[in-house]
Image (cartoon, rainbow, N blue to C red; front, side, top):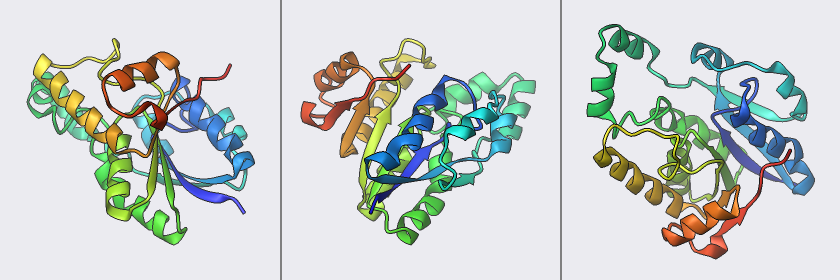
Length: 219
């Protein structure tokens, strides 16, 4: 009998683009390795509202019997719209970055109740999170701390070490650096997609080498 795993992927079909490919294939094949994923993601309407591409064809790779639960993205669309019109969004982002570090930053707290109910209802012992967005790490850490489940964190890309990520100031980068290490260190197993990222995290003493697994992206 397969073990049930709560599969937390903020980016998931019908969202299109590169960010969903890894999660899509994991869900497609996990049952062949003894795991039945119960997916927790966001509403399709919020995917469209956030301006993400839609690719309905990706849903064809998801096994028909997969349970998928969708919650609001918790992105404050109206607030962002008003602040942008008033040309105050960058100031707001600068001042409240520790709390509003990603558009999805509130999602882990808004979704914790739903995630907890799924864990208890299905007697789940293992939680998996896919990042980015990196706020998903907070949800994984909360579930491990509050419910005592095992947590596997899959990092599709580095966070504070990524050249493509922008921070308001060096101080904000340091805050994020601390939050990143605090979250990743709490995971039971950390998955990365390259050997170089594994070496980087070992060097930064985020996790021992024995607790970091490399699963490369497929083509």
